[in-house]
Amino acid sequence: MASLLSEFVLDNFINNYEKANETMWRKEDLDHRLQERQWRVDDLQREQEWRAHDIRTDRIHKKLSNEQRQADTRAEHLSAISEISAELSGFALVSIINVNLPDDIDLTLLWVYGVTSALTICCMVLSLLVCTFLMMAVTRYCAHDLEFVVKRLDDEDIDRIHPFERWWVSRCEVDWQLSYFLFRTGMKTIHKVVHCTEIHVLVVGVTLFLLELAIVSWVQYSHYHVASISITFVSFVGLLVWHSRIWSKWRYLMSRPEVDVIPNEKTPLMRKTYSRDKSALRVPKTNVD
Image 1 (cartoon, rainbow, N blue to C red):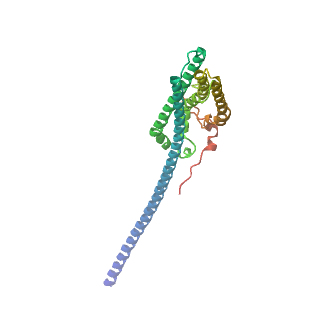
Image 2 (cartoon, rainbow, N blue to C red):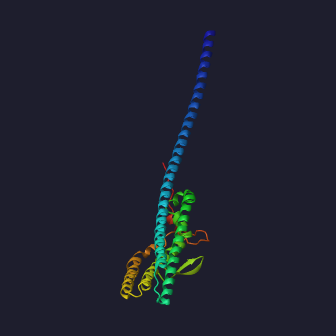
Image 3 (cartoon, rainbow, N blue to C red):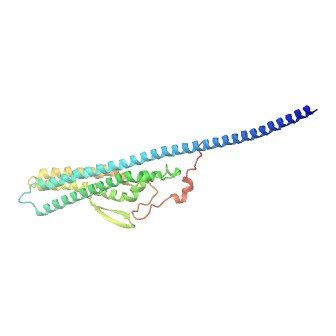
């Protein structure tokens, strides 16, 4: 009887011990499963963040490349204008230095020739200087500010906002148009709004260079009217082609770029159209799996 009782007690103790262990093991298994689930959620979130970061990095790199291409295009435009301005001003200066003045030259004609040559050289040199400083400004902006500005863009603004065009319109567009008009053509008044005031710029350039060519023929060949008339006719034809064929076809290049800023060098950049249709233009954020 005592052996049966002791055996019963021992079996009961062993069963209780196994049940306690089973309960503890079950709880540990549930805790481990919850921990694995949390690890999986953390891994998915981390992968999603990494993928979103990789996608943003790739978009930023493409945006920087696109902005840099726009800056390079602007720099090529400025370089072309400055090179041609330097050549034309050099030609005009050489013509002044090497011209042979006859003894009986008309002083009025000499005055017109001198003034025309001086205006041509001044306009071309001013155009050259403006283009040079604009190229320096573009280089400095691309080297120091462009990457920082692009990286600060929100995800929905990367494909919509163009930092270089905004900077160009607000800081350089007026000077660029002034330089181009100085280079371009003669004797007309342009109206530009700068700092809320109107400026009137008398622009001269290629037209004056062609006029100088016609005038120098009468100074150099004053005793050979046939040569003077021939050179004047050639200059007139060149002037006519320049105005009627070249400039009339490519004048759209001087139109302002379509950007959402008001070009003002003293006031902050202001939105023109996005204030009323911002909700229509905003790109919704998408979750990355």
